[in-house]
Length: 69
Image 1 (cartoon, rainbow, N blue to C red):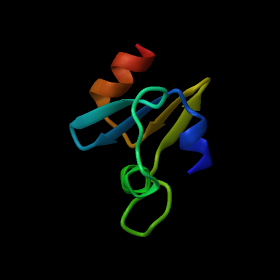
Image 2: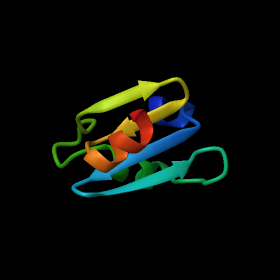
Image 3: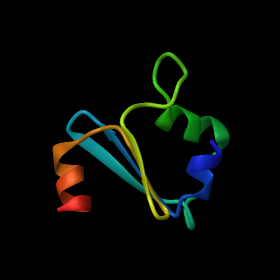
């Protein structure tokens, strides 16, 4: 949870879809944030990447192309 709260931008990928959350302007409850970044087992979803103030959770070809070229 702390890792996500420290990020300025959170990207969550699920299948082909992904969601961008500006953590500076969008307020998420702990329950909502936990639901986005954890899997069914209750652990942090993989892969999880932190680059500067950006946190990427999950995998999407489109998202990785957009973020990392």
